[in-house]
Image (cartoon, rainbow, N blue to C red; front, side, top):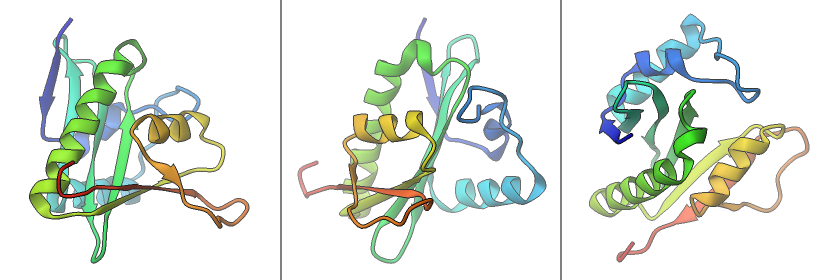
Length: 145
C-alpha cells in the first residue's frame, strides 16, 4: 500500500492516537492550538492510499528555532519505517529552505513511543531536564542537511 503526503489540517488530529494507542481526546482548547499550528507553520499529513492516518505533524516557528510536533494515527506502526523516512526528509528540506538551524521537540516523560520516534528522527536529548517535565530533544541542521 502506498502512502499519500499532504498538508495537515487541524481535523487530522481528530484521528490521532494517545500514548496508549487509544483515540486521543482533543478538546476545544487543544483543537484551537492545533488549528493555529497548522495555519502558521509548515505541516504534513501522511495517510495510506486507503485514507488511514499514519502521522500528522509540523514545524512551529520560534525566534531562534523551530518546534516539531507530531501525532501518530492508527496506521503508523504498520508503515513506521517509510513514515520516519518521509518525516526526516521533509523536515530537513523545510529547515534548509527556511534557514532553520535547530529544531526542538518536547516529549512527555512517560511517552516511550514519542521518545523512540524522536531518536529515530535524529533528535538527541537536551541534558539538564527537570524531573516530571517534558524531555527536550534537539536536532541541529547544517547548510547541507
